[in-house]
Image (tube, rainbow, N blue to C red; front, side, top):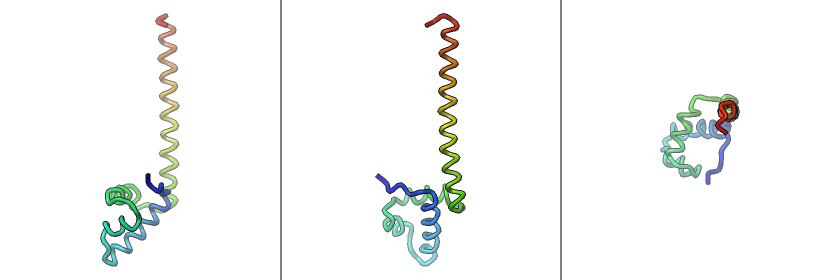
Length: 91
């Protein structure tokens, strides 16, 4: 299982990686040093590439809130379907 880096840590690591790449390191070397795969590095770069630490935390918080709201909506839709069935007498 992964180390579970926070968004702020990922942004800091990507900044650190930019410096290492500029000094001649490869992505493979950096990934091995951090204990992650190159795929993970590229995924982090695509997701958090131009962000600051606070922006990354905000994104993570918004994703959590969005997931919570989707669950609530799904529960309400289920409740409505159940009430419609009861109203039709198909229980």
